[in-house]
Length: 327
Image (tube, rainbow, N blue to C red):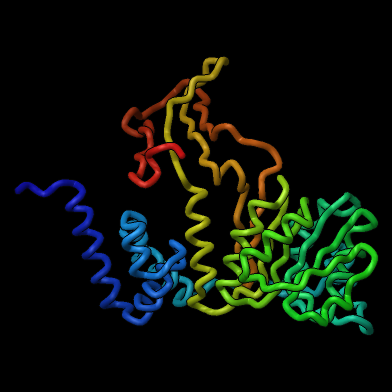
């Protein structure tokens, strides 16, 4: 029987997997262990319920191993260290934190403050609804209120009932388990609008995943989800985020014809692409931005009149089977 393109592809995938497993057995085992996080379930149930996605995830495994290996074995040049006090002046959250010597405790990694300022500054001085999971000593709840201004409403979530003591004007506290989906249903009914969600809770991957799944769709357009303390390699929640981020690359090619006469290519966004603008990864942190406005299509118009040599004129990109159909 003549081998088909699909069978050749499967053989190539198998060969890559074997080669990867021989060269990096420990890393391969760790990444195989993380595979269920990419498709949300246990290994056996994942393979039964989502056989196509399981095969495709396995097909990507050698590339993941190569990326991990490159990050660990490559000697990257480091930026020049410069002591510049102006950075603190430009970041009021960092100034607040550094000057906070007494009162309710705040415990944050220092590099988080640049991330906060980058994604939260657009909400300063506006009506904004902020939910933070993980209250601990209550100091960050007050910090958010001070930073965003009088239009800010802060909601804190913690499993410890003693944290009810941190309720105050403009600050409401919910007591519950962030891994309990019914708890989040209650929160959504009570708080119809959320612009920013900060997950600094239990830091277990199931808690982080369920919080994201229950609350990311609830964020308003333009909202920001930020999860802190995603630590350790391998990490199940980090792998889950990789699976989530891969959906941003969903692709459905169609020819583009514009009234101006321009031609080119277009792709119809999936439901996920219509809702999510970007996913950003930092050391220990993930940020997801929701779109403020609807996007109907992604376009790639061709500008110019000369397309030489003809052999280099791009053909329509191939559409992988997993994303060939529209959602």
